[in-house]
Image (cartoon, rainbow, N blue to C red; front, side, top):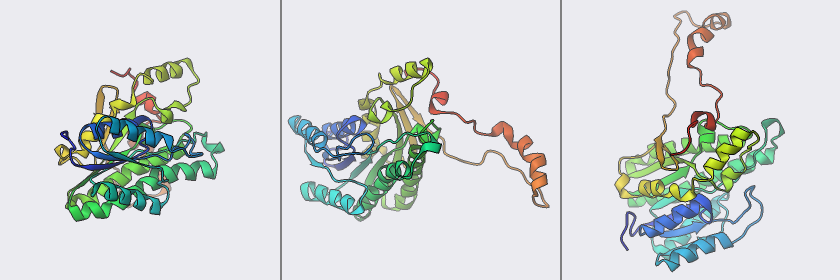
Length: 304
């Protein structure tokens, strides 16, 4: 089979629905053999259903592709090892990991419970670590490999009621960069994508004002399949030299995000006291403070 990732083997977590499904389908269309991992849980992480993963595998096979299903939870390290083993047993190697699986527990912060916090961190951040760690040794041995992680503008910029999700998604951006730095010597690349697409994950974002409701309606026009081409490209050998970066896809737009660097400095040869800081810090830095914006404030224009 021809295609940008022909002959490669990929694992896509959360591959049974939404963005993950779109990526799994396009990877297969572009020649990869795909492990479609999806627990089949609800948006908040409850229950399990083998149907979504099996349905995607069925669609891939119907179109002449190769795929197997996995319904193991990525929150357990042993399960991550078993998912990778399934790929090796079925297809003989592993080349690509797409960390896409996630859940939501949106709560205003003063009402957020420990389980709201830990469960979201567990799936997004711990799950991404577990899967990345499970493939890392194989990538090192074969001296090649590509990882694509899903971050979010909620983490990179901000959103109401999502402190848990924001922390997880910003953590994933750091995880991706750490992998890129540590694994570069083995020709392993790691990048992150902040996707804009209407899916279960974004469907729970509060929309109370008329302006917010109108914006959600516009977001609904952005299908999950719009994310897949960038994910597949970054997974391919054609993306050589691209690593440690953060991208975003919004309908027909692709963005490259900046990453934190110092923007202003204050120096005092005799050192700082509380009083000296009170006298100087605001005046020197206030104009450069990052405002308390949400993602919708920064991406204020309609999708194109």
